[in-house]
Image (cartoon, rainbow, N blue to C red; front, side, top):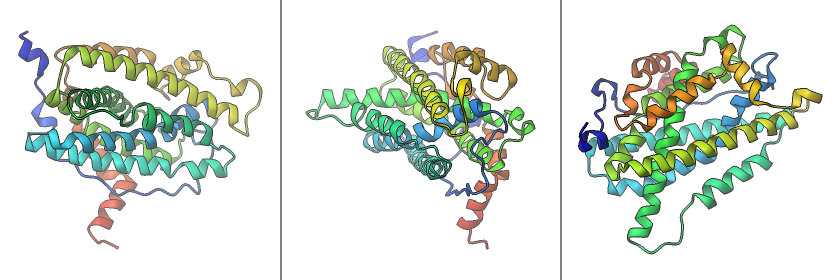
Length: 306
């Protein structure tokens, strides 16, 4: 493989579609605290999304608005604008779940304050002089987002295919939120990586930022799951504890991704020939969005239907 082929892997053209934000809304009035019946561990492991994503996706939008003037390709520029619109809606949709959790006795504020600090302070803008240093910090964050988006697309593809959640009676509104979001992650799965290639594409930076993103996600996710279980007012004793064994058992049961699938995703991202268009299915994502209650209601409102 030539250096050029390694640095600029070939995307699957048929997987590219124009992106649009869908102005969705959800009502949580009938959603129970344990929206996967009898399984607080899986419920709260997935609930960590509501804690991480609002701040994280606001940060995505902030960074991409800074990167947008550097984009010289018109199609990529349109993709980045579409990505920004979708990520802004994701942030709002997950943020709207938090008042519902508070009403049920689970106040996430201590955890979300830490997440806000991470994205706004540690990964936020720095007082740097214009020029090389400022551009370096922007490119580091663009590469971090590409690594994170590899996992959001992985999770999006997983939840679109997680039929065990249906079989176990998962709350339909929560399932629609997760699958609407997951479908859009699959839809725009190539944008972050394409932007990284366009602005830099260096392999050492890809590896370095992947290691940072993976470590942070594992740490934050296990910490968030433990926070939820420890503060769940309906749980006592050992039910408040979370272990890696619990995660593995849920993966084998089909209610969470398997450990093996997550580990196998690592060498794919680190392969010089990697491109996100080879992960997941745009056709499946579009098919779900055409049937999603929230997405179809948003489409009807946009078209002026009653």
